Length: 94
Image (tube, rainbow, N blue to C red):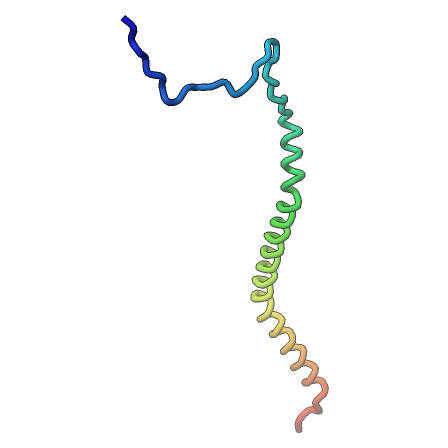
């Protein structure tokens, strides 16, 4: 009894030539310190730019706050100095 077997529609085919004795290339050894240094070198300009922007914003905020605190004191000191200067330059009233 001969039975006919149906051949599957998709038959796997060899697409790569394998030679005896050829081994796959092992992945390169990764030096963590060297990799970290390379990443830092790439990121350093962007990090410095962000740091500068953050510091400028912080400094500007501190200057604004200081100005708000010192302005009344400066105005009072100027008014007092002007009053004293005018008081010395005016002749006494009789």
